[in-house]
Image (cartoon, each protein chain N blue to C red):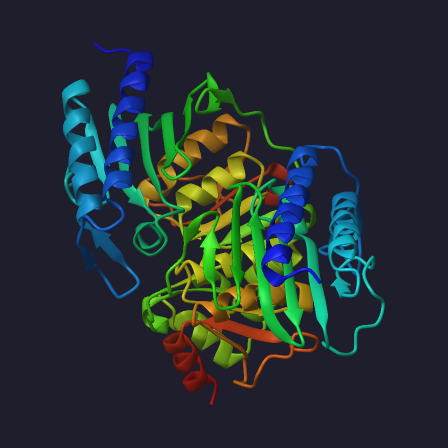
Length: 257
Length: 257
């Protein structure tokens, strides 16, 4: 059976290949459809990338389950036993279409529910953030150190549009207390912000594929990944998620409670 | 007397030099102070850059007035007659300190009140956006074409934190109607977004040095730069500013009126 270290090497190749596919075609070589509404886009590149990634995962890890955004993975994943790969073929599709920038490809392996491998590829900067449980987190070949444990009033915070405009008074106070508020429109780019210390926290509504890789990398770096109410994360069902330094997490819990 | 074309060449050298100074020292070679409150930072690099830029402007254009953020320019500028240089030595100082990314150096020349030269240097990407009235806008050596005239529901919009959290119902509707909302924390980076078509609009409270260069470049590209109420811009006194495509500007005026 293939080892985790070998899967790590192969997964890095697979995600780089998906990144190249998106990069080569982003100028005009794709079609766009809407999903639930006019702000929810999918392109033929999302679908191509997902098939490309899933096909190769099936070859290197045939007994695994695959949970992926655009429907080419396993249809029903109700448990996290064994190997579960979680795939986001393009995260930040809106930015991909409108900006040709600020989007990512994301991939994670959970083993018996444990975050084990994580990958976020910032395609435009050609920088792969990757980690293996117990072996640290890297940006390409450079090891990332644990971000400084700053509090909310010393930290930039990212929050998505829905939460920022919700009118919820606790969320508003959190957004106002931070030293600055940022909104990049890609969970992957925002997760990179937190793991590199450029952001002290990120609050958003996240699906499994938005969360899986960033959670793995953030936890490996000693950051907090929790539901906003402080409860533990379930990657299959958690929705409103905070990724932050310990101190930002404490400061936010104090505002919420 | 030195021509506008010669001033353009010299100004490009000056702003590149200020960018290099910031880049070389950004890892740790500076001190930080707060200005009006804990979210309003200034560093020794802001001050160094401003002195470096102003000293050289005085040499190449001795009869001009200089309006600059950190107090090394002329103290009272009440009219825009003759040559007025407007200087932002580091725009996005918070990002400079916290992210080592997403900040800019900005410079503009107004002649008898007319936007004539404009420069925004994205330091980390080493990309200088520059324009001369009637001669087009460039990113380094590449000419930028006029962005597509998309409407609000097809456009990403940037809005600053104060406006987004203000609770104002018209601003909230504008932020919700856009296809997506973004917040980068640097007027320069956000202006670059609009002139390259990555954003369809940007609404913010802007000081003269936040506005002067971006306004010059945006107008040269046929974009709209107005006060949010639709009135004309006065670079010395306008505050709440919209930079946008014509169609986004129309869509926003319809929401406000």
